[in-house]
Image (cartoon, rainbow, N blue to C red; front, side, top):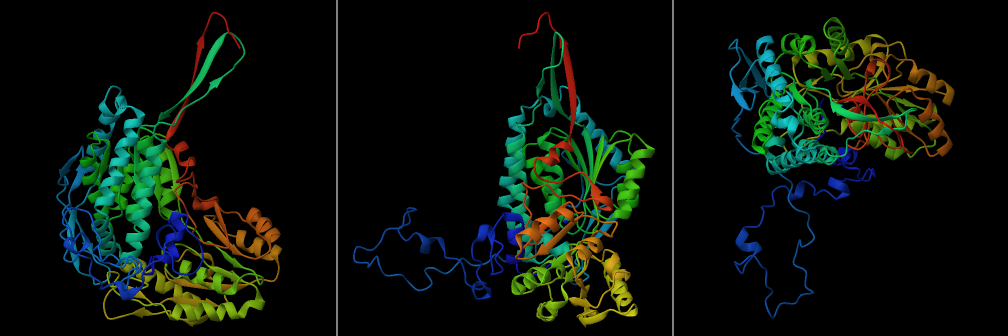
Length: 563
C-alpha cells in the first residue's frame, strides 16, 4: 500500500477522490503552491486583524475594488518542525507507558542520513502477552468498552481524528524522519488519508446491524453482527501512520480491541497515535501499541491463543508464516494484504503524455509494486518515461523541492540493487539509473529498464523500489494472458481511449483493484486487497467491516407467527 516523490500532487488524487488531471493538484483538487511560496512567512495576527477585535474593518477611503499584490497567491506550504523532540519511545499497554520486560531497545534511524533518532522499547513474547491480557480485559462483557453505545465509539474515533488534525504537522515530520517519506507527501497525502479514514469509520460505528429473517414455522429469527474480539494487527513501513488508521479504525468502530505492532523501522507515528488515543478518551486496553521485530513480537501475535484475529500488511513470505501460525494454534481469522507485481498496461490509443506522467509517478516513487507494459508503436512513451525519470530530484525528504527520498534500510537498499544487477545480467536494457546516489543515506537513482522479458527476475519479483520495467505486447489477448501469468494479483492499471477495451481488459485482469486511465486512485470508501498470493480479505470501505465482525443467528420460538 518506498522512495516517494516530494510532489504530493501526483498522489493527493489517489486518496482524496480529487481530479486525476496530471497538472499539479493538492487536497480535493486545490492547486498547490509552488516552491516560490515556501519562504513566504505567514501574516502576524496583528496584520490579519488590524482592529484587534477579531474583525477586519476596511478603511472608509479604501478602494474595495483594488486587489493588493499577491491577493490570490496560495498559502505557504507547510514546513517540517525543526529539531523535533521525540516524546514517546515506550510500549503502550492498558493506556500506560511501559518499559519492555527484556530491557532491550530498537534503534530508530533516519534513512536519509543514517543518524540515530532515538531508541524505542522492544516488545517480545512477554510484552505481547501483557498487551493481549489488557485487550482481553477491555473486551470482557460488562466492560466500559463493551457497554459503550455504538454512537459513542464513533464519537471517540472522531475525537481521535480531531487530535490528528491538531498534530498534523508533528505527525508528518515524524513520518518523514523515520521512514524517509517526502515530507509534503506525508503531510498532504498520508495524514489527510489518516484523518479521512478515522472519520469514515466513525460514521459507520452505529450503522453495523443485522437482519430479520422470515424462516418457516413459528419462530422469530434475526442476526447480530458482533465484534470478533482481540485483534492482532501488524503494519509495514511504507505507509506507517496511514496503515495504522486502516487497521484500527474498522476494528474499533466494530467494537473490537487491538494489539498493534508497527514496523521496527517506523514506530514513531504509531507511538504518538497511542498518546492521542489515550487523550481522546478510549478506555484502557482498547488499543495497545507494541513495537518489535517480526520474528519475536510478530510471531508472538500470530501464535497467541487468546488473539481472535490477525490482520497483516507486508510481504507474501511473511503472510504465509502468519497463515501457518493461525492454523497451528487456534485457527484465528486472518486477513492479509500482501505483495504484488502490478501491471500498468499502456495501449497505443491512449494519451501518451498523461500515461507517461502516471506511469513514472506511480512506479518510480518505489513504495508500491508495479511494472509497465506498452504497445510497440509507442516507443515515444518509453523515451518519455526515462526522460521523466532522469528529471527526478533526490535528497533529504525534509527539503523542499525533493521528489524522492531514501530507501528504508540497508536490507531493502541491497535487495533493490541486487535485482537491478540481475536485470542487467539477464539482458534487459538499462535506460537510466541503476546505481546508488549521494555520499550518505540509502538513495537509489530512479531506474528504467526496457527490452524486459517475462522470464527475468525483475519482471517476476516484487522489487519495492524506484525501478520500472517496460515490456512490449502486440494484442489485447496476449497482454491479458501475460499480465495474469503471475502468482500475484494486488492491483493493475490500464490506459486507453477505447471504452470497450477498458471494460473488457479490466474484467479479464486477475487483480483486486483495476484502475483505468489513472493509477493509485484510492479512497477510504473503496475496498483494497488482492487476488491469489497478494492476500485475502479487504481493507477500507464497507467491505472491511466484514473482516472485523462475526455473524450470529438467533432464533426464538414464538406462539404464533404473523406476516
